[in-house]
Length: 391
Image (cartoon, rainbow, N blue to C red; front, side, top):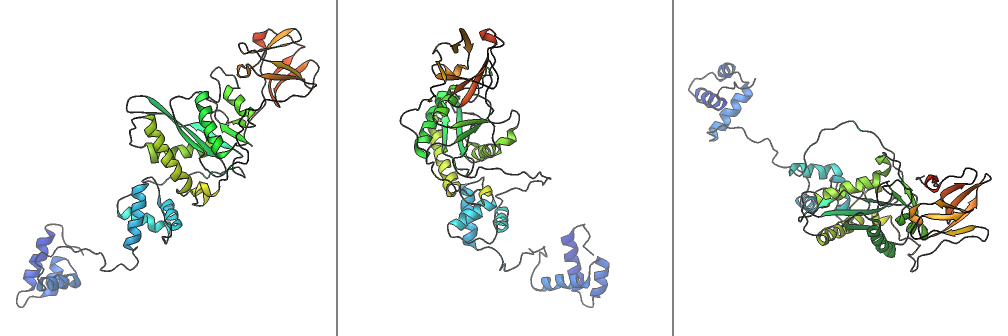
């Protein structure tokens, strides 16, 4: 039985004093104090050895042969210090890639817990998600703006993010002053010069990939089509279809922007460049079996052309050039509205599967329709666009 809670230390000392008296019945004293003989003789032995305090001693073993070596613990803590958002699996993979043998991720986790580098969190039932990825690098890049941050002077900074769907490699990160199409185009040109052209981009439906007016086509998309890069859009209100770049944004927020203030766009860009280098070439990725994105990425074989190509049309196509000031084409004695993004561009009118119905094409992409059997005023001509959604 345990000691009574009233002055435990005093009870121990009282027991020892009484038990050491001449002629004391020690087993009877043990019964009176509510302790076992083994406990009573233990305190007597400690008192004879000179322990006057009789306080509880640590139960920690004198030797821990199974404990991690001090050098490995120091290495784990050093990586955690450099990358506070990394967990045990990433730290283990990073160390092993550099020649430090680590028994298991659970060992790293215990080291972090022992040194108060992580906090326990409540577990909750989760939902298993199926990952989808393109078979080869540069088949599909994802592009988005991470939520804006405020600089020390109050200016908003909009980080532009690019991510290869297959490898999770980031071809570019840019600190932008706005979210305009021309700003995005300038940064894409830089990424295309270094990494080549992807086959397609996957974006959401907001600016600058989509027009606030509701028109499907944008000047940025027309520029990409001239380069042979398709634009695929996610379904509205379905952010789970863009899980890779959303997860990328979470890592970016945790490892770059958390609890930090930046004075200028240049300072943000410097932080983005450093983090992108670490993310691409050092940081283990769980979805890639703890390898780095650079290990799966290859530069695109399609280089950025020095001169922007123009669409070519067959001789039988009816070709019209859209005015640079008004988004109309003239056909059969009438003006027909086309998307504003094609102002100044050459479009082809081709008959479709019904008499009087023509499609308006930019190269091979249908951007509008003209129905001669139901003449309408210019303001009422409807747009019909080809469906673009990820496979």
